[in-house]
Length: 315
Ligand SMILES: [Fe+2]
Image (tube, rainbow, N blue to C red; front, side, top):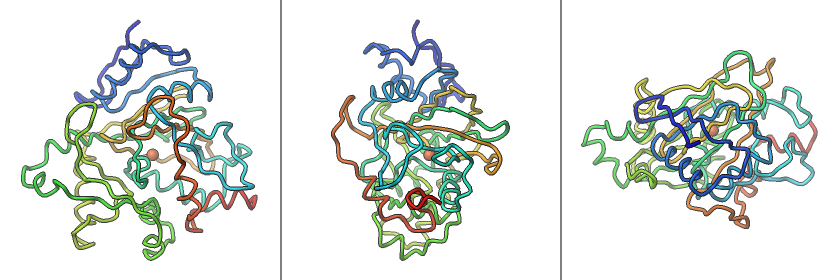
């Protein structure tokens, strides 16, 4: 049965059905998945029945999978390094009370694109729901291609060739973590064009995120005001929708033509177990031996949001 994609907004987001993602897909079926992604940017597959291993195997169809950073002595909750833990759980599966972990996750509630703070960007994120709260915990998505197309021509002209400076720690500071700007400046920042041509569709799109700290060549205050304005523009109701999750649902989003953010839920009382694979931009399927820059980046984590330190020290 061919893939059926039912649009959510006219040019953004689709509920997809017709493929069994637990089985190896043919080249034609994989092309149907990527075609839907190029058209809609966000695709929702309900009740997939995917296991951790099948989640990783399906994700590998789209390129190299980024791997979770490791630190000596740290235990991991999830069995595969390709699975990023987006839950509110400890390694033992209990709701975390660790302040650094809670502070770190608050950054996910801001509009962002995954890994915009890395030199190599992430293309697809594939998030699978294992356990969901009774209320809340939805994920919101914003269409940065249509939002770009609707900008006034003079704004488009101004943004052309502008470079955004991105830091993971900036987004955590914006979410309330106690991190000095000097601490952020001492760590790695990634430079990415604010506007690029989305490869799969040929449409131009904005590339901004909560990680976008400054715009090169602009005074800090002016650049930050412009970043805020652009995020507000992209997240107007005509460009956004939310996904209400059920266990087994998989959502794939293309970070290179969208933004997203997590919705609130009762973080201290409800378990939310979400696991994510992420594909590195421009890589081929089944590439296995790329470098792993996350480990180096996370080794320099500011103390206030250091989840891994908490794991090593067993807090
Ligand atoms: Fe995210």
